[in-house]
Image (cartoon, rainbow, N blue to C red; front, side, top):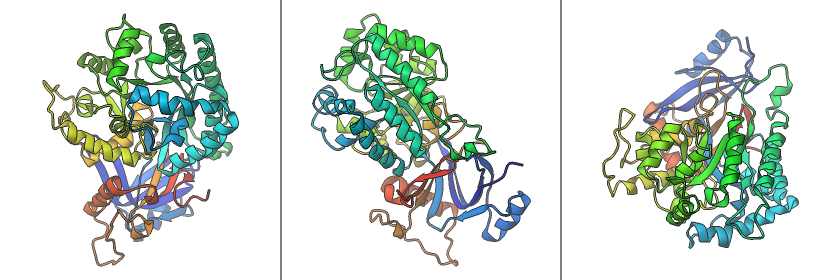
Length: 487
C-alpha cells in the first residue's frame, strides 16, 4: 500500500464537464508523499474522519481540516502568458496589437538580453503568478536563450508546473530585437529543449523511496511567436522538429487583430488561411495551443477541430488592445478545446480570476450580435451566443486548460491517480478582501455546509475574489505559494 502523507477534510469543488461540477461540502481527500491523489471519500462528517483513515490504513497521516468558508479547487491553468511582459502590466491600452508591440513590448523584451536583469525580474514574475493561483503556466520567454534558461530555472526552483518556450523571431521585429537567422533560431530552440529536459525532478519527494509517476513539472514548448515573425523556412524547420517528437507542445498566436491577419496572408500567399499557415508547416496538431483566435474563418475553425488543436481564450487582452471578442461558444460547439490565458501584458492582470470575469462579460457581449448559421453542437447543449455559466467558466480555468495542454490525465480535476495541483480558497471575512462579502457564521445550528452554500461561495470567489482569497497553492502535493506561504 502506498503511504499517505496528508489528508484534507472539508469542502471540495471538482469540475466534471463544461456544464457540471461537484460541490462536496464534507470531503476527505488523501495525497501520497509523491503528491498524487490516493483516494477521495465524499460526505464525511467530522466524527467519521478517524474511522475512515483507519480503514484506509493511514491513521497517523497529517490531517488538514478546512474551516467553513474555505474550500479546495483544482489549480488554475494559464494557457498563454508572456513572462517578460509582466513589468509592462497596465500600460499600452491606447494601442492596438502591432503598434503596441513596437511601442511597448519589444523595447521591454529586449532588456532581457541582460541575464542578471532577466533573473531578477523572473523571480518576481513567477512568484506573483503562483500566488495568483496558477499551478500550470504556458510561458513565452523572449528570443534570448540564456534568459529563457533562467526562466526555466526559476520555475523549476519554485515548483510550478509549466511549459517554457523561447520565441522564434527573425523578421518584422526591430533591429535591436531580432534573431540573426532561421538556423540560429532553430539551434537556440533545440538547445533550450535539451536544457529543460536535463533539469532534475522538481518534486522534492522524487528523491525519496516513493517516486512520482507523473510527467516532469517543467517541459519545453516550441514557440514561433507568430507567423509574421517567421519565414516559411523557419516554420518548416520547427515543424520538422515537432514531427521528431510528438510530446513537444507548440504555442503561438493566431488571428488576434485584423491588421495582423491581413499581413499574415500577404506574407504567406500559398496558404489559404492563417490557420493554414501553421498546418502547411506541420505545426497544427493535437498539442498546439493557439492564442486569441478572435477573427477565425469558418474554414479555420473546421481545420483546427480536425487537427484536434485548441484555443487559449484571452478576453482581458482582447478588450484591452481592442482586438475583438473570440467566438468561444462556437468553438466549443465545434468541439475545439478551449482554455483561458492572461496574455500578460496585453492583458493587464496575471490572475486567471480576472480572465474568468472578462470571459463571462465577453460571452454576454458576443450574444448581442447573434451568429449567422450557428453550427450544430457536438455537446448536449449549445454554447454559441450563450453566456458562459459558472460551471463552464470553472471548467475553462481548470480542466479545459488541462485538456488544451494535453495534461487532463494528470491535472485539472481531482481523481485517484491524478496529481494534487490545488488551491485552498478562503472566502471568509478574515481574507481581507472587502469586495467579497461572505456573511458566514460558525453557528453549528445553521446549515453552513450545504451544497448550495458552497456553490454560492464558488461563484463569489470567481467574480469577486483575488489573490487575497488564495491561502495555499499546491503543485504535485507540495505547498509552493499563496497568502500563507512564507516567501
